[in-house]
Image (cartoon, rainbow, N blue to C red; front, side, top):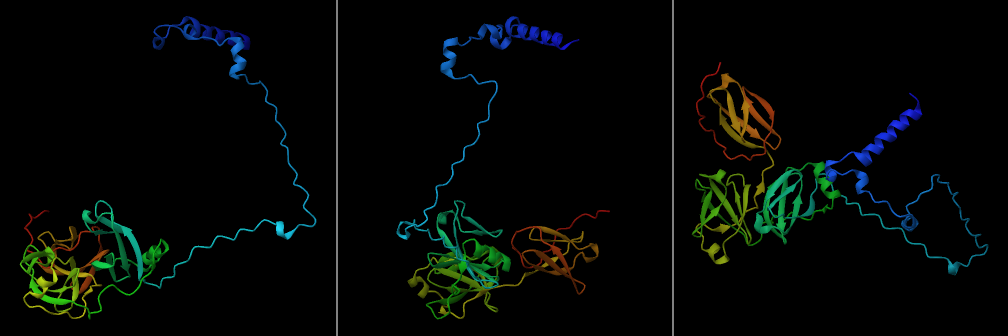
Length: 336
């Protein structure tokens, strides 16, 4: 067929579609029944006509005015001074670095992949972090409220400094010559100690252990008596009068320091050759069933001492160590 015949067939289909064929969406009317053409006299008012051919208008360039051959220096516009470059924070390798974070509504702050629980009651407060590669101190309004072992690397500290951090001042740990006192207490199975007739939370993991408690104006620092390793820092609920009446009160010694080494725990191998560390199952093999092994837990690895050698496994959980001593595992059926 010719092009003319194809065009005629197409025109007939359009005519039928618009004028004769009923449409369900139009209540069985045709589009032509619903179409109302715009009167000829109103088309120019609407300005909907577009010429069939659009001519390209050549772009006109405006030549700059001739410069004044003898300009007056007094009339010259002032040259704006360049904006000062942002100050580059220089932090020594390994810190320490100080920076601020605002406690969210959940009370759970996160810095470099680690969470710091402060509680919803402190939401909206600004927390100052003092951090290096060994310890992190958290302060609110200049008062230290928590000290934990650092998980930050040198690269992490440099990144925090580049994102608004600054070189840190002296460590917020007291020098030992302030009004601080110490007592010794045994932590019960619920993780509590008795201070001045009050049950104060230490940590459940410390249950059954005798610890030292350094008492300062705002904080209680729980530490190991032999190594003075800092174990926990809690708010101090006691007033000065209650502190003076504590049994076994003595002047404070050197401030306890957080441990910088992996946590050392013991586990007994189950009948199927596995141990559970921080809710992570570590397979050691059936030949070790019933044996007690020493495990070193760091932030990224779990190291098990076996037959005079150390087997290192990548850590896959962030659950803290809650049990240091070995427990007798539950028996398991033998599986072929």
